[in-house]
Image (cartoon, rainbow, N blue to C red; front, side, top):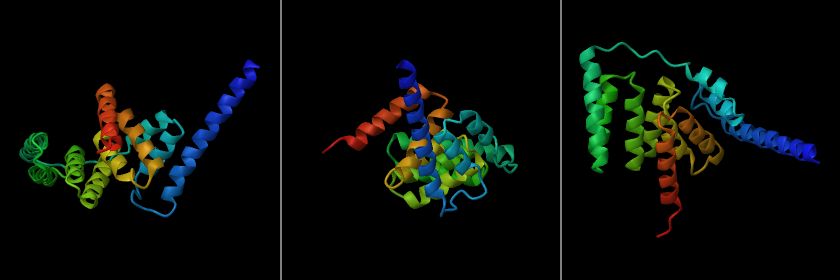
Length: 193
């Protein structure tokens, strides 16, 4: 009886994973948003709980263009200014600062990810999508970019958003803080006025 229950649970888990994979695959059959990248394969691997494969695919990064130390420092300074502006709810200033950072160091995935987050916060999903696409092309293991991409997918692509959030957690440096942030976001999206 116990073995039958275990077999049934294992079969249900296989069915759940297969459904998650089909949901991801159905979205990408007619879209080429991430053509030429490992993003699709990473989403499918995450849906299958294939974290070793996800990690291997995440190493498929675009080699950043060489920039001078002065430009790299200018980008870092602009990122710091953008983060400070975000904390003060100065979205336009944050967007401008992150755009300066991305221009100074086009290979800085975090600059593009923060730019996407600021644009999304300001309500500009189109530009946020462009910036997050660039961030994920540069660094498929960027947790900030996965988080922003997940939010962009939430309204219409729940299955992709779910896998994107799983990738956010997987690549997060501080999973406990990331979980707290996700719970706060959930509360914000599920609270009623």
